[in-house]
Image (cartoon, rainbow, N blue to C red; front, side, top):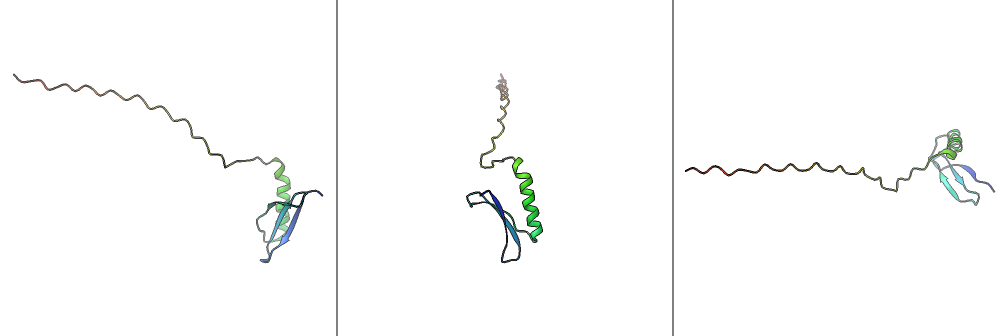
Amino acid sequence: MPAKFVVKKGTTGKFRFSLHAANGEIIATSETYNTKAAALNGIKSVQKNAASASIVDQTVPVQAAPAKKAAPAKKAAAKKAPAKKR
């Protein structure tokens, strides 16, 4: 059996759909929609966009840009001892 979308009406009167794999497992569930027509449009959108959708893995930390090397510290001018009075 191929994958299928199943549309349901909840106890609140709102609609949602789920995508079932060929083995019957639910692999995706939609948000709720106020109308059945809106839920069906959601299915059309998934069918149209899913095949070319990219994957964004937000579980991998973003690498920070390499730190800039600090400019060499300026050497402090040697303090001269005050001239001795004679």
